[in-house]
Length: 231
Image 1 (tube, rainbow, N blue to C red):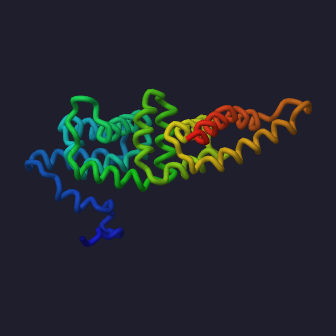
Image 2 (cartoon, rainbow, N blue to C red):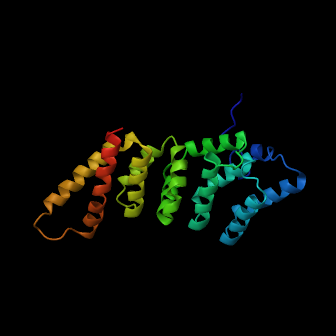
């Protein structure tokens, strides 16, 4: 089978023209879905929310590869509350609640394909959702498990001193819960470095606020290391 080219024209998202042909609905529904997808990418938050609500009302998310693809790209949605709802919607496709109808095979294939290629930005955005709403953690974990590069990207976030401490803590937690063994060297290196700095400050006064923030991660890192090394 000939592969879909990676380059594209007319400012379209790669694969969207192909996916549009897979909208197997009647004409009115197709037009409504396309309008909702356009609204979902509008600059106004209210319009994006209306577009998302329209997709849910039409019950097309689980049926259409196009809808799933566009929703997956909205994991970078700036409004955290809407992003949380998108996370919930996508996670429900991978792990439906008892009694919920399963998604179409093609829709699930496109979702897994997109998630498997996630890098730092969407993964960072997922961690923000978990930090914003702890009840979303299970759903965030479902999406992270589908990413081939999540372990490496989480390791980079853990070691990123510019990243907010709560986000780094989330990265440590998910690394431990999901079992990303690739993070072990990063965690070992971070533990040694932080412990050395804490010891060097002993008896010389209070550590800096930055050092206190780093030190606050130490118990989480040690717990994560213990769990990963036991796997």
